[in-house]
Amino acid sequence: MSNRNNGQTAPVADIKLPHVNIDDLIVCLKYYVDEENAHIRIKDQAICAACNPKPCLAFCPAHVFETDRHGRMMVSYQACVECGSCRIACPFRNVDWRLPRGGHGVAYKYG
Amino acid sequence: MTGRLTFDAIVVGAGPAGVAAALTMARGGLNVIIIERGRFAGAKNLFGGVFYTHALADVLPDYWERKPPFERPVTEQGYWMLSPDSAIRVMHKSERYLKEPADAYTVLRARFDPWFAEQAAAAGALLITRTTVTRLLKDERGRVIGVDTDRPDGQVYAPVVIIAEGVNNLLTQQAGLIASDLPPKYVALAVKEYINLPAKELQTRFGLSGPREGVAIDVFGDVTLGLPGTGFIYTDQSGISIGVGMLLDEFVTHRLRPYEVLERFKNHPVVRPYLEGGEVREYGAHLIPEMGYDRMPKLAGDGVMVAGDAAGMVDALHREGTNLAITAGKMAGETALAAHQAGDFSAAFLSRYRRKLEGTFVLQDMKQYRRMTDFLESSPQFMGTYVNLLNEAALRYFTAHGIPKRTMEHEILKMVRERRSFTGVAWDMLKLMRAMRG
Image (cartoon, rainbow over all chains, first blue to last red; front, side, top):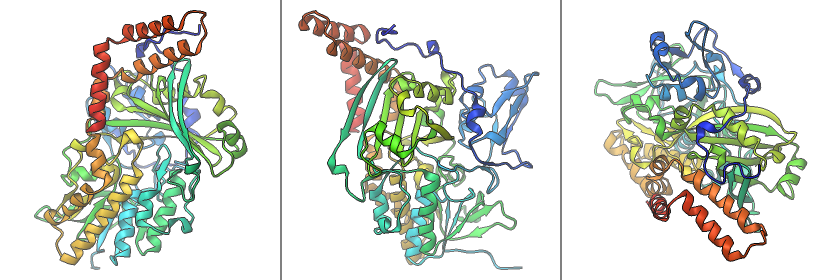
């Protein structure tokens, strides 16, 4: 099939993206985890529970957000690359996002 | 009771804007502190990879003798326009790029930024790392008089603070220079991988004759699933920087995982052979402020100025940012020097900083492209439709079908009409022109 869609733009929803195991990418990053302080917190779990699209599960580039069996929003702040997307793009502004304490968090080797 | 820790100026953030400001002020004789939250300058910084030297030469005329850790000069650059199975590649290569120092280099920020910060330290600025500024200190009249940090007794005072905190502009908001967080339609999210490849192999693949040549490719179309945004492929010394960026809103609306969009790009039939056998050494993500000229923060308040990404100083169309940041940092630094001379740190005096910047490419370019983000947002299919169309037309054009060329031309025109009416095309072009001309 040399001509997949005759040059028409496929609706984005029809495009199948390759699956990526984010852990394979995160593993090459260097972190200095602040075990005592989570720099990202959910302000109100009830808001996440009622949030239907939960876009953070997709757009977070480090897949920091995941729901557990009971539907609670879990935050793996340890994997965060501190981009700030969740602070800005959470539809309910339900993410309390701060900078990690000095010297903690991600440390790029290349950047 | 010890005295307050006081400097002539405080710089928040040791990226290009902050370091340029600190360097300028230290050379002007001020006692300057740069406060950086990373373990070293650059630890938190990531960009696509092209650095323009003109702004660096302005703050550090002898930068070349100081051996900056550049990756490769950009001696060939251009665009790839991807459809799902094809690519049109428009590249410009010239002997005239082969000069030293070159106008543009690829750079890895965790290598470059520490070097740049060292130059400021050598000029006398005090660089404090591993320290997060938690808030601005203000006097009873709301004037900025210093910063608080996460160190014990971590208050630092100065009559002027230059905020170069980057795209996450928390202090800029606290200073009242911008009302709120940027909406996700005015911020791009970019993800990038640094892929290791032996220099020799890299040179063979990209047609480079040695370490003094390098390629910078910006990619449109299928790389972002036809959505507004770009991809990039830049050659480093012995590796490739590859990434993709789109408005954050697009990731939200279409529920896209950024690293999967990047993986799809890496697997494109035209891209894959360049990466073959390469080893992913690092992955990262960063926001890019694309709010444009009309939504920039105020650049100065009482006792405070803001520069670089924090101020939205990015020309996304030309992938420029660090050069805007360095130029702005320098102007902010010069303004702080003048303020010390005048003994006046009021918003009115510091507004000279903006007037200086208006005389440079920084604000002139930003003004010219003020409509760009809105244009892309209002024409979300722009890239996909036309890029695919071009690829289809090229396929017809380059294939001998055994049909008369006149028929082929008609077929191509018919194809255009099927996808977009002629008035639609004319309208798109007009809008694009308006966005380009400012």
